[in-house]
Length: 131
Image (tube, rainbow, N blue to C red; front, side, top):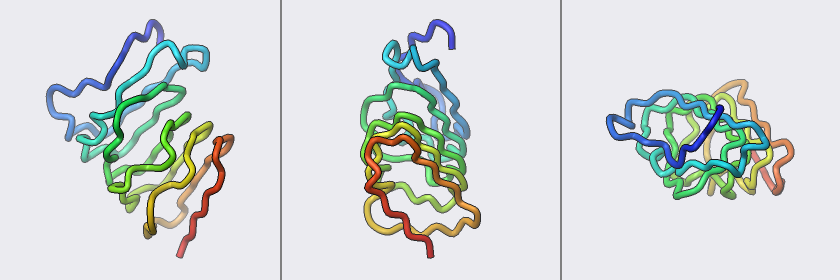
C-alpha cells in the first residue's frame, strides 16, 4: 500500500454491512502508519479479516461472530474479545502476535477441519481443547 497515511478504519455509512477487510503493509512500513480498531466491534457481518503487518491501537470490544477467516499478524492484545464466539471460524492465523490465550473461558468449536497458526508469537502459553 503505497503512501499509507491512514489512522483509522472509517465507517461513516453502514459498518454493520461490511463483510471483508484486507489491509496489508510491508514490514518496513509497520511503524509508519497505524489503524484504530474500535470500528471492528460494529461490523457484525464481517466474514474475512486480514490485517498483515498493521500497527493497531484502540479498544477491541468485539469481533464479528460470523468470521470465517481471521489472519492478523502482530495482533497486539493477549486474547481475542470475550464476546467473540468462533462458531463460523475455519482458519485462525495470528503470527508474530502477543496472544497468550485465544479467549477467556471455554468455547465450543463445531467446525470440522479448523486450522490454527500462532507461529512466531511472543507468548505461547496456549491451550486449545477440541471435543
